[in-house]
Amino acid sequence: MHAFDYLSIFVSIIIALGVSHLLLSFARLIYLRDKVTIFIPSLIWAFALLVLQIQIWWVSFYRRDIEHWSFFGFALYLLIPSIVSMLSYLVFPELKAGANLERDYYHNKPFFFSLLGSVVVISLLEDLTRNGSVHIDANTYYRVVFFVIAICGIVFSRRWIQYVLAILFLSGLLCYIRTVFSML
Image (cartoon, rainbow, N blue to C red):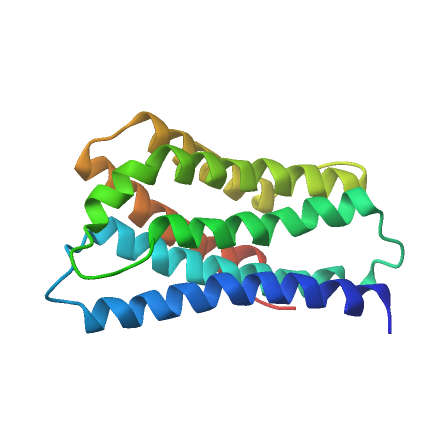
C-alpha cells in the first residue's frame, strides 16, 4: 500500500460525511416540504457543496504520485474536505418541522463565508507546501474569484446579493471543473 492509498482513505471518509449529510438533508426537505421554510440560496449552496466535495475527491487522485508526505502538507490537504464538510452542516443544519432555512442561513452566514474563504487560502497554502510555489494559472484565478465571492458573502447581507453570490459560485465552480479538472 502506497502512502497515497493510506491517506486517501481518511480524506474519503470525511468527504463521505459531508456528502451523506447533504443527500439526507435533501431527502428530509422533500419529506418536510410543507413544514420547512425554504430559502433558494441555501439550496443552491447545498448543491454547490455537493459538487465541490465530488470535485475535491476527484482532485485527490492527482496526489497519487506524491511519494513523500509531510504531516503539515497532509494536514493542510485534510483541512480542505474537513471544512467543506462543515459547510454542509452550516448550509443545512438539523432539519425538522418548523425549520427556517433563511433564518438559519443568515444566522450562519459569517461563519459559512469565513470558512469558505479559508478553504481557498488553505488550498493555496497546500499548493505552496506541495510545489514550493503557487503557479499563476486558471486554477489560481478561479480560486481568487471564489475568495472574492466569500468576502462579498460576509460583507453584503441583501437578499438579492445572496442569490447572486450562490449562483455565481455554482456557475464558477462548474466552469472551474470544466476548465481545470475535467480529465484525470
